[in-house]
Length: 324
Image (cartoon, rainbow, N blue to C red; front, side, top):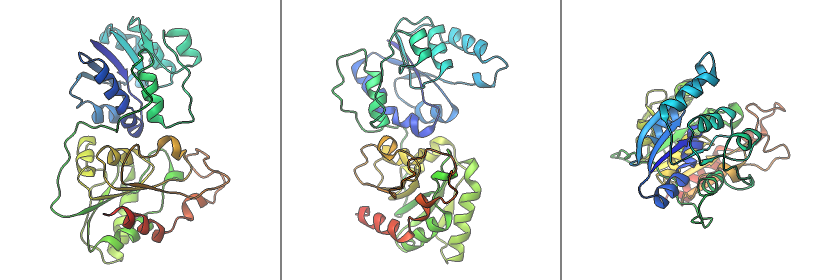
C-alpha cells in the first residue's frame, strides 16, 4: 500500500508529526511511505523503516512553482492515498496532481476545492493531536490517544554525563533566552556534567557567545558543535545527553523523542500546542504575560520581558528537579 506524506517544513513540526506516521504504520501494516518535505524534515524522518522514497521539495526555487509542483507530482505518480501536514496551496496542488483519489488535508479554501477529505481540525490542542486526528480521519481506529514522538536514528553514547545546551530557535529572536544565562546555568553543572553546545548554521554566533562566557567563567569541559553537524548527527548527539536545556525549538522535540530529561524555555509561543510531547521528565519554564503568546519573531513591544524575567537560578532549579 503506497502512502504519500507531505511533511511539515520545520524540523520540530516534522518530529511532532511522527506519532501520526506511527499510527498510520500500525493501521496499515503493508504501508510503504513516500515522504516529501523540506531538507531538514526529510533528513530527520527518511530513516523510517517503511519509507521507500524521500524527496526534498525544492519547487519553491523554480521559476514557476506551479509547473514545478505539477512535474514533481507526475514523477511521484499515484498512491493508495495521500496526506499533507502543511496548510499550504502548493501542497494541496501536489496531492491533486498525483491523481490520487483519497487525499487528506486540513480544511482550507484550497484543500476544499482540490481534495477529497478536508476535515476541520480544532487548533486548541497539541499539534501532535491535530496531526494524529488528521492522519486517521478516514478510519475508525483513532481513539484520541497519540503515541510518543519517534525518530528511527540510533543515538550515540557518551562516556560521561553530559548537559546539552541549545540556545537557538530558528523562528526568531523572540524565542531565544540569553547566551550568557545558558552559560551561567551550564557553569552550575560543569563539575558533574560535560557540556555540549548545539546549534544550526544560523546559530553559530549565539553558540560562540555561550562559549566565550563559559571561558570567562572558568569552564573548560565543553565542546561547541554548532553548525558542524548534519541533522542525523544532531539527533544522535542530543539523544546521548543526560540533561538538555533548550529554547522552544526543533532540538527540543528531538530530545523529547529520545526521552531526554529536558528543561524548555518558552516565551512568545503557544506552549500548550508545541511543548515537548509525552517527555516523562520535562519542565517548561515560562512567565505569564499579558502580551503572550504574541507569536512574533521579534518582541513587538521591544522589552522582551517574557525572556528577561526568567533567571538563571530558576532554570538551574528546574534542571535539578529532573536530574534524577
